[in-house]
Length: 478
Image 1: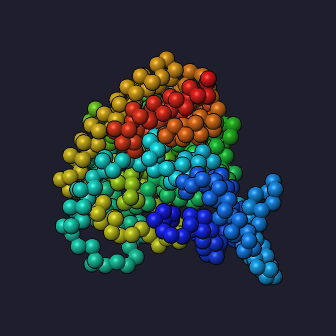
Image 2: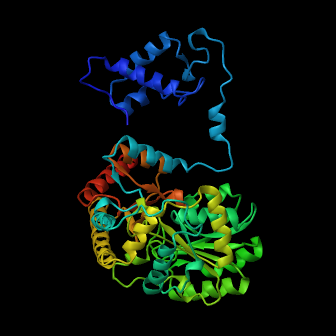
């Protein structure tokens, strides 16, 4: 990432002007595009606004940019008096297309973290470095050679990894599968993308939990699907609502995250599991079960997935390495009927010709190594410790001002504020106080709910982060 050289003899304003001119020449800012405001740019690079004012004045003197009152500063269409060229309107292209961008809150969180990595991160869904099996995977990689063949792999995924997953699913998840019923993906989101694009059509109705992580994924809207909600309480979703949705809207698929649900951390009660499967079977509805958190059960007795008790073949089962090992490996999987696997494998091959074989080899070796089980034990212990630190900090900083259900696994704590506040104002105030979180409205909830993810935050920063959140909340109420 570019940064100012404060030891250089070249003035700071000139360094900034040269950097902006370079980005313009590379096409990052095409003619006519809007540049960041002087104030915002000054905050981003850590200088006084007057320094950016000087830089912009330098670029204006060269005819590279132009400023108009009320419309900001833009790249000149007529640089150095040259005749205008027919440059594509990249802004219009970027705003077009059928695949929607991330929700504004998620983009704001990502922007804040990129600008200030010191923020206490209660928003990101991945494991912190101290929870990932980095040394174990490094040792596995040092033991093996990965250069035997580096061509395109089987469209369904690396066969030894699928074979390892057959054994893993049977031992840890109670799911009986064959290698031909498994598709390797780059993670749960790719699995969901393939399902929404290939098994459903625009206008189809689907049911998701409310609140739900799925609600934060624009891929559902991008696919033109109509989304209907299944309310979540302390025992997760209420399956008795399904018949009504089916009768009224002809829903074609149910998406669920029954074990330590994201964002609420709840578990689908046993009687509801059987009711859900029975209802889906009677109506002929497929269930998409996303199961990233089961192995994080703090009691060491992982809850079995719906797929393990599915006797009618209603469930497509999705799993991933991201929440239990290493998101950077980009390894996920799907267990589905072979006809579905073949259809989705064909679609995925059209997208990327398959995944890199090396991470798949590493994942297969890690699954079958002596490292896997001890890693899971440490992961559960450390996640529970972080959860307890978070709860202790909330009780200290916000006594009587926040309510939550204590999860027995997973990465998230779902909280309800005693008095609703504006989500956007609360997030901005939190960023100013050194912390980020995800507002509940991202998951379909009303204002006044927040999700704290404790897997990413450093242990020593959890108390500091909640203190910052409390200051932000109190600043809005006062």
